[in-house]
Length: 254
Image 1 (cartoon, rainbow, N blue to C red):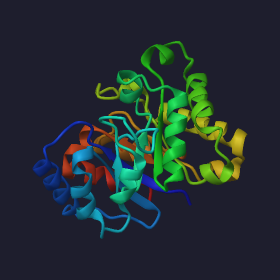
Image 2: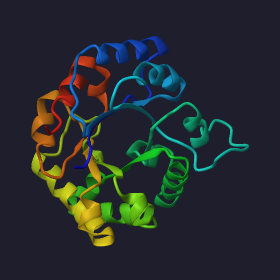
Image 3: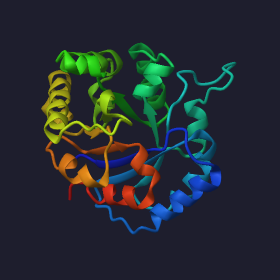
Image 4: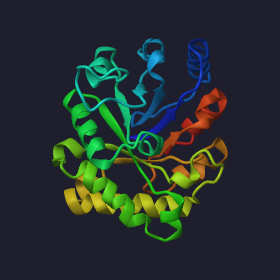
């Protein structure tokens, strides 16, 4: 059974005291997790240690960095390496978020290098893919997302991709309040799994968790997560409210 994951992306928000309080408030909500379910908190770099210390003894609750360098060390001022993340027990790293692709001009080749260095250091990537509005409106989204997958992931062997985590983000639905319908989410998730199956076989593709990211809220999480190929969500704004995110966690498939 593949993992069902509720992942939070706090983005560039919160002070350290606010981050600590949000973590404590979330843990105190009493959300429940089955063995195949996980909570992942995508935390700004300065607070990773603080949050990791708070969740380290909580079963199936993990911390993610929101980015990493494609270099292991060196004269790269302002960058953070996966070896640094590994040294503070970070479990996951978000790679290829649409905002990094747009604002920092990260292309598929660079993201492939980041995936490689994360895996080489035992850190699990949450690889993001998704199409902008103009691609969706021209009905080219399947090919667009397929290219992202092929150019950033298809160099991996079956063992490396087994149990991988992918987050599909329709870019036109991030932070806009506009959400892909549950049917649209399922169609793309099914397409992603079909593309993966074409490369690695259906057995491996069935182990890969595919999360939906795009204005997920407590009000729509049950419907979206209920789709057969949707394995949870990568949640932005709603993850900054403990009660809201707890409700989203509790919406994961049982």
